Length: 306
Image (cartoon, rainbow, N blue to C red; front, side, top):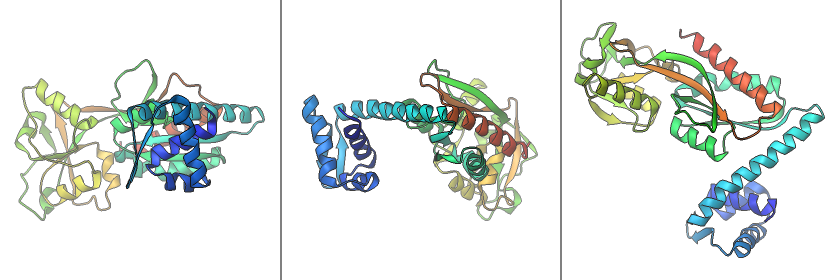
């Protein structure tokens, strides 16, 4: 097994196509196919099933993909550390961001990264916490910002911000059905009487809402599940339901003015925004700079909504 074979296999597996992987790697497709075939012959396993739409991974292929990503990540780290000896902070830094935060910090984070690490490459990935958590464990991400991550000996964490979730409504400007008149604050138990539009499980906000409502003997009235922040807020604006999110998520919405926030009490729904990175993989100087940068940018961006 050599690195070219591993890189070829990983890229084909990730892109689901030999032709797309060949373009991404800048090599001829027959050579790419030969690299993958050499791996299969060497280990007497079929890693990829070819079909008219591309390729799918076998069980053995899934195992090799996980290890292959780890091997390539370690090689990249070695190159970065050798480069840092020469005084150059370079390499690739992959950062995962939740949708509720992505629009708020993508631009300032990119500017800060280019200023501090001009020779390094930044990769930003947006996704819900569960996908980001899996990407971190699989080695696709170097660090990620998560809501309420479960404790793990494999991960290092630092809480960046704690905030109470709020109820978001269309207020009196709803263009759909007439909304229920709500005050500046609502009781958590009263959410059982409101039509809620929230993400599907295992979204961190939903899990927190359901757990706290069960604790007080209530159940949320979920009328629609949508895994898209802007789509949720669009429907709320039309008066078709209510959302339960951090207040700063309104920064993602192009026209937040018709939307109204209501404080949730008894109890409040406290959510922790946490920076997470691997405790098992070595942290290069480039990654250390990037970690400090993410902390600074996130805290500054959220402070304006405090």
